[in-house]
Length: 104
Image (tube, rainbow, N blue to C red; front, side):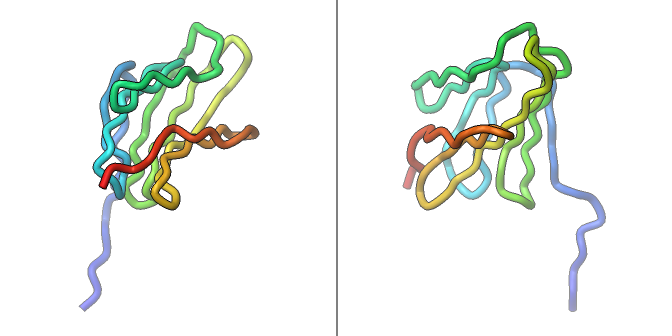
């Protein structure tokens, strides 16, 4: 028997400071427009504000968190995901940033 999912599993929020679990891990991240708080460590994000249309989407099927919004420098989007026991932030049209390591 094959089970199909009728609705996509992509909860989202427009609220700065939303805390989420990175899919596939037990690591909690708190996301602000220009900052990610990870296990008490603050990681600044290169965004010049104000940020409009700020959106956080936890994509459970793809196993990542996507964050986007319109900044003073234009549209910005990045993805947070677990990759080989590491937590990485991939800027769209940019570099990968190591956030930390996945908790056991």
